[in-house]
Image 1 (tube, rainbow, N blue to C red):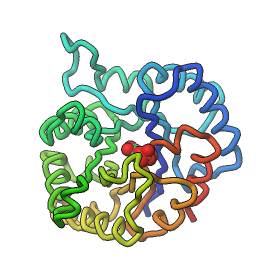
Image 2 (image 1 turned 180 degrees about the horizontal axis):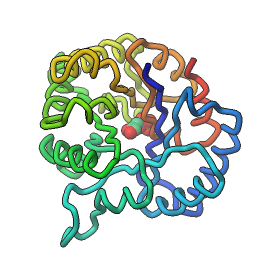
Image 3 (image 1 turned 90 degrees about the vertical axis):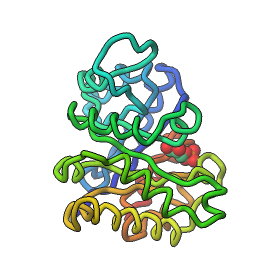
Length: 255
Ligand code: 13P
């Protein structure tokens, strides 16, 4: 039984003042929500992580805290980077790894993503590992090959026990921030393919316990249909996670 997860990736948005407001509004919107049925995570920028952590703990909110990235080295001369140990100390549960914006804008390779995934597990963090194809890869029918490669490379040397808890996010790059979404059928088909790849990497039992999210222009208006697909276990939400009412409506769209 996979508990669905709705995770808000705030990207580079919100000061820590604004983060306080958004988390409080979200707490209000989801006051009656059953977090055992649908898990909710917020992934603010690093400058708001401490604020978010204290707010969530002090107000006994049930949101999980997630980070948007981390470095794979333990410590040292890596100006501008944040380590897994630092996140762990903040009681961060999730860390988004290999988001297409990290891959495309900051040049992260599958190998970097794999190193980060392994280090995250070593620090009791749960990776939300992203994969997805570009517009031209989609047009040339390479979606399955691309996501398969990213999943296989990203999970190298990951043990079956670790794999059980990982979260994978399928985010077609052409759907991110564009208002275009994969059709529910396409999302199901690619996510189903990812699950079958996981079955060959590990086994059917492990594959069926891994949560796979869809991401890319998820809004309250389209969430219900996408989230109703058999293999879609939730959503990684960008723009719509910046509005408490909209994000809460996506959480409530899971039946
Ligand atoms: P949007 O929901 O803004 O399309 O972003 C999706 C995303 O990249 C989440 O990680």
